Length: 582
Image (cartoon, rainbow, N blue to C red):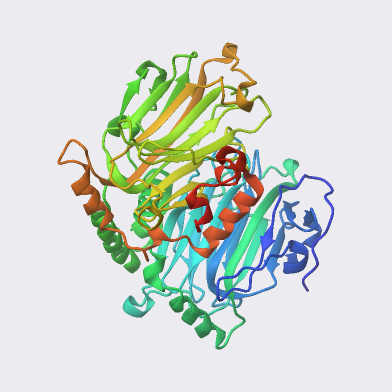
């Protein structure tokens, strides 16, 4: 029998966790918490929540005593998401999970499993899918971040067309539905629950069982934060067909394709961090290729042919250093970069060699730690010339213990003054976080770890609001001094005894339409690049889930919005501020 979750804290401190279990057909989510929406189905004494049911910790106490929670509601199709802080230190032999599953011997299941390791050795991120009780479709990754140092977001997106696993908004794997066309089993009819658990598996989890659990370190505690279930509630029978029909009415498979930028991100992860793929384990399958792999290869080949620009590019190969090159350092493989601010006049700037119009530019950044007051680290796009266009991420440093300011802005025809600022909901100096600028003829979107934080729509033709459409841009990364204004209005200056101030970049990812001012001019290729988009494409719309996440960020973490600064505009506001941006 399922048990109610425990309140209080006791013992280990819990990392915040919010479960939002949703009855979802039309796209409207309803919030909940652990008390109301979940049961502890195994070892409830090892599961505790706090913050009025919004926070959760799961503990592994012994080889036979872990913990599991399960949503009360079942569903067919949708998106389930949570942020997890994994067990720190020596986690060998432990398995922490986030997954969906139906009941019964011939069950369906979609897995995230996190296999612990010795201190200093990386976790293994294990993914799998079961259909009709058969799995054997494992794909494993090593993380490109420290999953024990703060929370990271894990999302499973399940539709009639495909399953996608995401980490911090980056897709890492796709499993497509080839059941009707090629007989590859796919979950389509069995309602699932959402689960989170921690349990012991020292016989196989760490280095194939060679490294056992150090039980003197127990309890092993995993913390969960921010779960959302954006799903079609279903308990079997005709609702299965209703959920599939609702999905078709919402745009079907055509509206659920990965973008070129997402395909590039996934390729980068799989090229650099995938450590096992069942599809190429020929010994396991007697020298044969799994049937779904040959189909997937066609998908990737088609996507690669359609994609324009650079995906998973190397900083060293694809960029120049136009300012203070002595303050830049590349990693051995060229995929990582450090930029240093040495003095008030000696920072560093990197620029892509190629220009482009429209597309997605993305990178991972670890900002300057400690006292970063007076420093500005950037990632942005810009054209050249006085009447330039520009789309900005600027990270304004602060005193030790005080948060950075994430500053966004847009320039069109040389005019900016469209600032929006945020305080981060994470520590941007403790590990890497992804920052993406998506620029289309319809709109510009700023993303952090896959979550949109701001949208600027194109109202140039309809309302005369300037928008970048004709000038090819470069991608830039830089660090420089701005102690006269960057930190608390210039009140706090840089402490130059702490120099050099170093920002680290990793994983340049550019999926763009190449367009150069030096080869035929910008206007002709600008029109060609614009023609690849239409107003109904995913590049011109945010999903309901993205809109909900953006509203949450803006409601809780936005600290300045030029649209509501009436003193700046003598009581009036710019035209675009009265127009819908999403």
